[in-house]
Image (cartoon, rainbow, N blue to C red; front, top):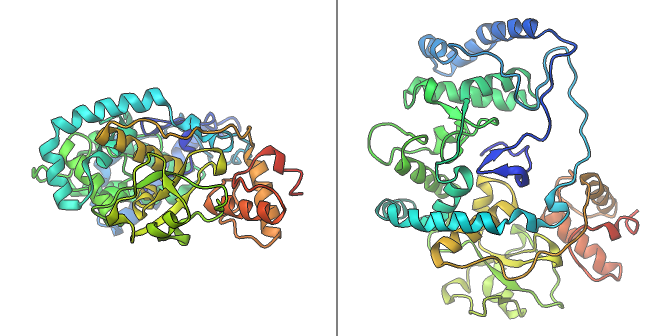
Amino acid sequence: MRFLFRTLVFKTLGLAIALSLPVTAHAVSKASVENQFEAWVQKDLWPEASAAGVSKQSFTKAFAGVSLNWDLPDLVPPGSKPPKERKQSQAEFSSPGSYFSEKRLRGLAASGRTLAATHAATLKRIERAYGVPGPIILAIWGRESGFGRADIPHAEIEVLATKAFMSTRKDLFRKELIAALQIVERGDVPPSALKGSWAGAMGQPQFMPTSYLNYAVDFDGDGHRDIWNSVPDSLASIANYLQQKGWQAGRTWGYEVSIPGNVSCAQEGPDLSRPVAQWSSLGITRISGKAFPKAEMQADGMMLVPAGRHGPEFIVSPNFYVLKEYNNSDLYALFIGNLADRIAYGSGPFKAQWGDVGKMLRSDVLAMQQALVAKGYDVGKVDGLPGFKTRRSLGDWQQKSGLVPTCFPDASLKARMR
């Protein structure tokens, strides 16, 4: 839903921190670019907006006072070249544990439990309407905008227009800009109140404009879908999004488990689901010592080892992958699941420790993926990101090569895979 080009590890309260300074106009004239932008708005953008049902009055109102925001990241002004991609090290390539700040999780959980009581009646109504538990909704609300307390300062039209005109993803932002203009046309909020992050994610749920149009709801009954100021609208919109993406009412997101050493870690992924009872029959047990609920035994479960054998292990339900629809990251979905459990049950961090797998560059993981593809493995997208297909392919290759499967890239494997 939101734009996933930024690395989640560097997010704070749902607002991404730019990884590099924006491109500035050294070789091009800012004044010239501003003139080109104004011409683009009127001659290029306006016809498309008009065809999408935006009136001239709404269009003019939306663009009143709007100019290019040169402080945004990832800008490529006309006449300049995009910056070369830099090598980078990310937490997923060292220890994913750095994503799970205990101080932050405790703070969010404490606030979440207080707000669960404050909004208990609203959350019950939302769960009846959409089937999504209150703690899950609260966890997303807390992760995305600090329960609505985060400063979301940017003028949405200005951000989207700037990026649609001169970013590395023009088409993506142009689509969102047209959607934002449709929001203005529908009158839910005036353009001055249309605030978002530097990446265009809006309001307390951090919806992109297209997601707002598709999933935002008026739950407080005032006639407007207000995800900036209305808590009921914000919470119900999160629930509606999850429901529409396939949330299964009555099921949890997953369980932390212990996977015996004789059970291959190369079995993870949503495409390798099997009944929870079958996983249990392999000797996989909940790390809490409790049995899997009887109602879950015949339902589908999936193995998840986000750090391979170097960290906590899980059996997750399809709802875990619904959480990933909100933000396509295993670590994000685990963060939400853990935070929701803390809010609901007063639980703490995952029991197993996140191990140290060394610091890996994205280019190192990319080279491993390319080597695995050459050996006939399906690693998913060859992009330097160790997703479940990369992890399980690596584990399978390790086992066939006489190594103890770890199902996670580490520096010791680089030379072996050349």
